Image 1 (cartoon, rainbow, N blue to C red):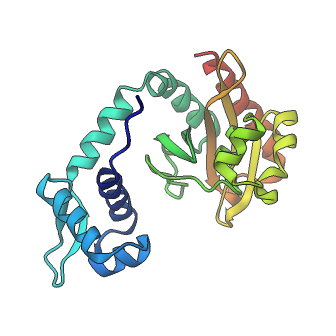
Image 2 (cartoon, helix red, strand yellow; image 1 turned 180 degrees about the vertical axis):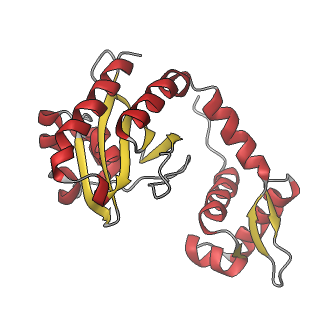
Length: 238
């Protein structure tokens, strides 16, 4: 017999995710963002506050932000990830080879999320953060994953029918072996990424070099793309 999910638990988790995105945020703004009844959102906030997940900022009316409990949970999740542990030395080497920041992103349908980051030593650098949800259109790390999904899986990420702007570059990514973002998300930053594939050719993750656009000009694309693709291939199969 199937077990029905708890709607109240789903609402509490949805509110927690919204607080993390909008913090510090008040009840009225949360209710509008979620298109939920204020009283239901207020009960969820009281539950989260009572269990130590969120706290008021001290303003009136109260605005809410995450406590360190969420950070502790996230740290445990990433620390225990075999992929993250295996990838870390390769990410550091790629950072040293390119001089730029490197990130590891994983599919978490319907999102693609940054799992680890090794920042460049340059004073001016791209600075993606762990837990960052990547844009599905434009992001090289997202393209690298999406290029290796089946049409049915793409619908999960991109809708039905999928966004043509997101679909357009995927065939080229598969053929070339790496994806390119030439300031497509923000003009100041560009990226090159490749997929880490399992034994069946399915994407476990993507590795991306992220840099200020002026330090990743066209004449470096092939060089950096080859380095990223090589690094991804070294981690493949796991």
